[in-house]
Length: 246
Image 1 (cartoon, rainbow, N blue to C red):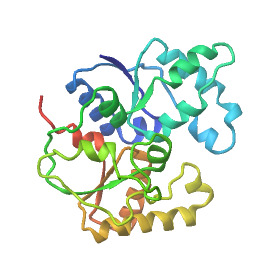
Image 2: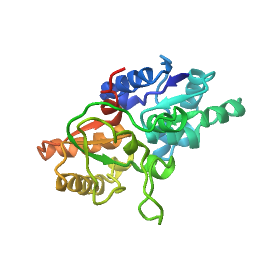
Image 3: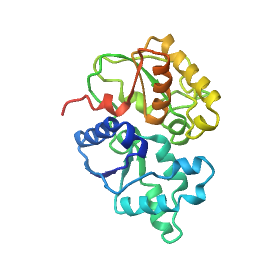
């Protein structure tokens, strides 16, 4: 199976290990992975700030880079959600619509397209799983606690057979971390307090790591953890799943 890897700009700049892990993981799972070299930001920061009308250049560049691929895979639920909801083209509406339906978050692609339920890696640590809002409520990667329905988590399910992992059950499985893109800039105090509350749940369960599908949320939590001089670390789920041997 051939897939194009879409790496968000902040992952490319600050967390290349997560990008490399996603690339290697897809290869281990039998995919031929292409990485379009001219890809840039998808335009989400502008859209989050109320400037969706200024993202035409980002949209055009995304379309130019990823046209021709049946699957586009990204290790970031929020960027995937942005593309699914907002990618557009006045000159090629059909192609834009095709790409909107072709983009998948990494764990979504593994479970729904590759039909893999779990991966046998090796990560002997106590881990808390942060369910990011875009992934959970937008992409339906996991069940929302306010619904009277059985709980599920596609990223969580993939971690079940990782050797040595102690995946804890948090008290509030789907609480927002407070990042919210540019929300953490415009409403810094609220954002930080939400992040501190999210961290307290993990601290109560004595985790070694906080993982998730969005490095943006983990970046926000990581900043708070470092300022608190906490021993808890953050790690993208791709880096845990990539510990399995071919």
